[in-house]
Each structure stands twice: as C-alpha cells, then as structure tokens.
Length: 496
Image (cartoon, rainbow, N blue to C red; front, side, top):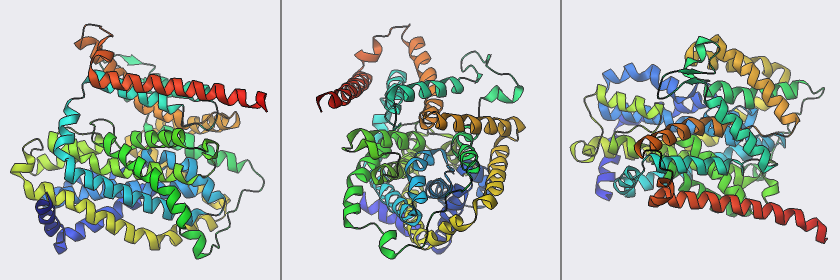
C-alpha cells in the first residue's frame, strides 16, 4: 500500500497536476462560501474542461472542488448562519453562536483544524481499507439501508437542544416535504400543485430558507442588530491546550462516523455530519451546552463531513456506484475519458486510482495552508453593518436557488421556508431535524418499498438479516436510553 501511495504522490507533485489540484480546492472553497451554489454546480460547469485533460488530472480537479467546498461551507455557516453546503447545516448550530459572541476567528480556525484532521483520517481509511470497505458496502441491501435510515431518523431527535418529541415532529415534517414530487415506482405526482414541483422540493431552497432567510428575518426585526466584537488577541484565535483536549475525542468520533457513512453508497457528507452531531450530543456529559456554541458540537460534524468526502470515493472508484450526484458527475468525467470505474480499476488503472487518493492528502494540506491566513479576511464580513449585508445575502440566496433549476417557484419556496423557519424558532422548534427528515425520508421510502417487493412483504427480514438486525437493536436501544434519560431528568427536581 505504501509503495502505491508514494507512486500516486509522485504523480500529484508534478507541477501541472499540482496546479490543477490547487485550483480545484481553492475554487471549491469559494463555491462552498456562496450560499446555494454548491460543488455540483461548479463541477457541472467544469465538466467540459475534462475533455482537454487526462483522466487523472480531471478527477483530481473535480475532487478538489468537492472536498474544498466542505471547508468553504463552514465559513458562511459560522459568519452569517447560511449553510453554503447541505453538510454544513449542523455547523450553523454551534458556529454561529460562537461568531455572535465575538469568537468568529476561533470558530473558523477550529473548523479548519477539525476538517483537516477528519480529511486525513478519511484518506488513511481510503488507503488502508478501500477494498475491505467496498466489500462491506456490498453486504448492504435494501433492508440494511432501511434500518440505517430509520436509525438516522431516531438520532434526529438528539440533534435538537429542546424537546425530543418536538424534534421527532420536525423530522416527520421533513419526511412529508420529501414526499413531494413523483412517486419512485409509479411516476405518479404526489402533492404537486405546480409543474415545477414534479422533481420535488429543492434541498437548497429548504436549507437556505430555514437557516439563512429565517435568520435575516429574525435579525431584521431587531432595533439593534448584534455587532460582534472582532478585535481579538492571538490567544482568543487559536485553541488552547484544554480546548484541544476537549476537541480530540469529538474529532476522532466524528471522523469515524464520517468514514463509515461516506463509504456507503447513497449516504454521503450531509448525513454523516448530522449523525456525528447526534452522537456527540448523546455521549456528552453536558448536553445542555449544545446549541450555544459548544466546541465538541462544532468539531465533530466538521471532521465527519470531511472524512465522508474522502471515503465517498471508495464506492465510486472501486464499485462504480455513485454515493450522490457529485460522485455521479465524477463517474461521468471518468467515462468521458474512457475509464470505467469498478472492482478492476485498482488493477487496470493504478496510476489514476493512487494519484487521486494521494491528491486528497496534498489537497487538504493546501486547504489548511490557505485557510489559516484567510481567516482574518473572512471574519471582516462581520464588520460590515447588517443593514448593508442583508440585501446582498438575500440576492445571493435568490441567485443560488434560481441557478440550480432555473425555477421561480424555488425562489418563492425559499421565502416560504424562511417565514416557516422564523415561526419555528419563535416557538422553540429546531429546524435541523426537518432537513434530516427531508434528506432521509425518500431513502427510507425507496428502500422500504424495495424490501417489501423483494421479500414479499415479510417484515421479519429486518430483524433476521444480521446487519439490519444489529441496526434495529441500536435504534431500539437509542429510544430506550432516551426515554430512560428523560424520566431520570424529570425525577431529579422532585428529590431536591
């Protein structure tokens, strides 16, 4: 393995390839900052460029955009409460409160460190375990995916800092919104009131509305918008030893969660970041601090989504199965260059495979090096008066949402979801479970219906198959533990 990795490293360090790697990660970071645009838009626009590049350089460029956008997505989330990418939605929950307390530089540097360490963990997993993890992923059938998604929805209740029951209600609302569009089996329209909704509600519209526009409405209604203090000392910017120790375990746990979910086709960085946050909140001794700018809640999801961004290439390159739309575009770029991804790719195209893997290592080092000096520039956004920022942010949201499907309805829905998010926050309903339900709901329906078709409606297959049985047990244990904790918490005041 070491020999092949160093062979890949020698390919990436060639001046021309290194230039494309640098351009890819830098463009990815900028794209991640812009709300609603996302890596898929940039990769779609640059796909024609791959005609003029060899397969290795093409994939290195496109992959750099993908994982670079994971870094960039955290910037807008922390500074403006605008998730630049779906996977950075969780970053808003802890990062934005830190920025409001005047610790924006610290939050940005923390995410850069967490992202880098998570990425390095993901690269190590890809190098050491690409083939075994691909084999494990092949063991996941429709029942396993059904139970995996069900476990994710149970974990959604742990994301909210408030009532678990309210969080479940919000997750169900998200599932209902995810059902809008065409039926996956029959093609019949469901809850489609205008033709633009035939393909469903846009994830970007929902995320931008619930998290970005709702925050603008909330702050615009205040007579004195909060002005964070940004004249910080060096000690405030860099995590101290105690904070580094506090971050260490969450980064490790988040990286593990991200590496696992990234290697499963159809999951990806967004789901892994939610799962990492839910896990961190569950294992924490101080869960009440989550939602107020708690360091572990910021570090774990950032490590997770970046680890997932690396390991998502395992099913893409070794099985030829795209984990998401971005991976599908990368497979398209490979096919355009005459390379068919699959189990024989490591043998037939070793320079391409190991060159791409080595580019993850080099690209993440480049990202860390350009992130640290840029922190000061990004944080200057906070010195701009809010009344001047609002029109620009709203314009960026509208352009980003419209550019995705060229639909005015998507822009109108963003406004609706913005008002809905504002009302939800007023009544202490957290928006994060809505988004998780929206992402996971279609996956749950598709795999459940597929399971029922394959096994003639036999529900026992969810518990008789080993992997899905373990996932069922985990979900039941999680519900039991949550109920027990809630009862215990209610009884405490009575004894005091």
